[in-house]
Amino acid sequence: MSAALERPAASGPGLAVTARGLSRHFGGAAVLRGLDLHVPAGQFLAVVGRSGSGKSTLLRLLGGLDRPDGGHVLLGDRGESTAARIMFQEPRLLPWATVIDNVAVGLGPRPGAGGRMRAQAVLDRVGLGARSGEWPAGLSGGQKSRVALARALVSRPRLLLLDEPLGALDALTRIEMQGLVEAAWIEGGFTAVLVTHDVSEAVTLADRLIVIEHGTITLDLSLDLPRRERRGSAQAAALERRVLDHLLGPTRS
Amino acid sequence: MQGDLSEVGGRIAPARALPWRGLASRIVAVGASPHAGWLAPGALLLAWQAASSAGMISDAVLPSPAAVAAAGWSLTLSGELPHHMGVSFLRAMAGLAVGGGIGFALGLANGSSALSHRATDTALQMARNVPHLALIPLVILWFGIGEEAKLFLVALGVFFPVYVNTLHGIRSVDPQLVEMGRCYGMTRAALFRRVVLPGALPSVFVGLRFALGVMWLTLIVAETIAAQSGIGYMAMQARDFLQTDVIVLAILIYAVLGKLADGVTRALERRCLAWNPAYRA
Image (cartoon, rainbow over all chains, first blue to last red; front, side):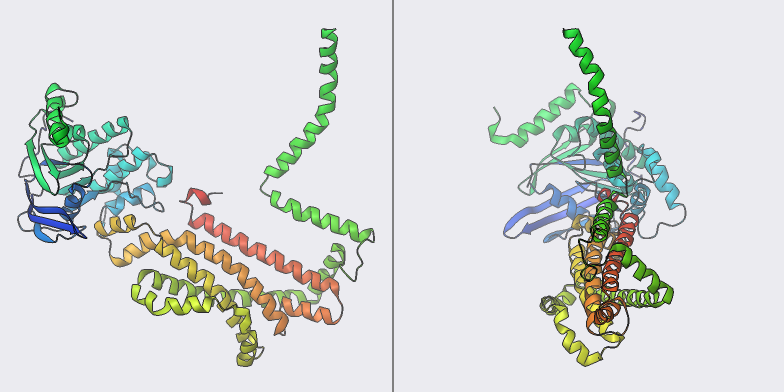
């Protein structure tokens, strides 16, 4: 996490994301109500909200896993479709494929020559290069997450969507994973959208933080703190406090 | 006084405990070995032989293992036994291949296509509840006592366990993995080959092992009722000549064949499901 690479240039490989009037309801309940959002290319956006606020639904719509009932999503300027990669809440590794084969899934339907070498290189990058021939069943939760991250990164995505991928990890593993995600983002220059209920994780990683409540954006905050000094700094704590106060709403003192 | 006691205890106790401990540890060692499963059948065989030799069991009721072995040997030398075994084995495998193949294919189709499932599943579930051996009179009328009759019955018997378990396997594939595959751009064919099929495989193996049991059962019945060769026929013929030893031989051969088939399946499971900690040896 070098300070020299504070933020990728807007002209990098990242993909801008635009959502216009996005709505989605399940049964009678509206989960998203006409949500508008623009994420500039290369930005690291954190989406925070309580469970059931619609933040995961938003991510699924952005990733094309689900179709909106109203409005539309535009990736890039002309609507590129295949560039997004998703890291799910669970690692979702194929138990019957070796670690490296799981990473190679991320290369897509036509891996091409040198795909395996790239998979191995990304595995080395997340510190699991020596485990490439093993079954996922033998890995710890944190290691599985790292394989899932490698799978998401191996195709050099222009947009990475993270759906609370670190939620189930213990505190230390989580900090390690946050470091890996941040390093990958700085190196890869992709646009990142992280859905999380952990405000401190959002403040540590993101350039910008939005809060979703009842299907609309109720807070949009830009976080221009120096990346190196975020964890544990007073400024970060103050920002965290502010977001939490907003989320806790009427119960705040 | 105290010193004496401890000395006595120290001298005598090990002398008494040692032989027991030796035997116990030997039993534990044998029990832990991979061949421990053969211990019980072996002991049973010894007891049987002892009872026969002591005259406790009449040869007309149950011949001794030695007599059965002798009958097996002479039938092997005459070429009769290998012939019947070969015929039975081929019938079993042909029936398994046909019935299991169709069951597997229909299970895959009905597990992955709602249309196919709606069209065929109800009929299949109804047919499943008819004991296939109840069809024997009809089958004899249709095919006589030729090979087709046996093939038909065995295929019908193994069809259902393979079908039901394949269907269940496909249905229980983790939908999250399917979504992951789709989101990573897998085509329908790739999704099937890399996610659905391997996910269903443990269940397919359960079906296969059930099918093997049904396969032998069906074959025994079919061969004793309507056949001119095979182990079952050999046993029925022996009954006509009161050759109890040959009858017992036939029964034992079925047991051994069943165990062999199960062993092959287990080995296949260990190979194909190596990723699953539950199937590691």
